[in-house]
Image (spheres, rainbow, N blue to C red):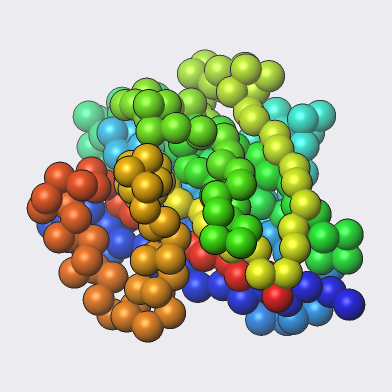
Length: 249
């Protein structure tokens, strides 16, 4: 019998920005996929604010995870194909000269992909950058990927570039992981600002996954107020925030 996957998600822009300015993107399975497919895929990407069309780039990355291969052998080819799509989109728009110069540099984004096999009770994951996966079992954090501590967060995470001139070697930047899943496991995917807060809370003996689950389960409308209070108190960096909580049953 396949495990059931129940999930909730939310994404919010920086404080002061509109929804359209949110450069995070998220891939979630359709209702039919979550009910019947053996393989269930999720993905998250955080576009770099200082680059052009980074929102579009992060959207292309997550949507491609649904049907393109991100394994070690095919990743360069996959990213090249997605980059070509981004370039076609970017060059189709008439821009002023200063924006055109910026667009020629390209866009950059972090990426995290998760594939769950519900027959084998396993998962595989890929990450480039600092979007982070947390796995909780019996109310204890048993795995983090690819980041393992708050000290690893900085202003220069690994990024996927649209311009091959600025693309670093995937052998050095792409991290691959795998593991087993059990009924009642909780898996959290979070972009960097919220992921850093999770680590910070854990380091002082808290179990922040319970608080986040409670907010999404019961007070979804209050998430933005809670988030902005954390930002105001300098507990969470004022950045786009995306959260997905997956419960396995």
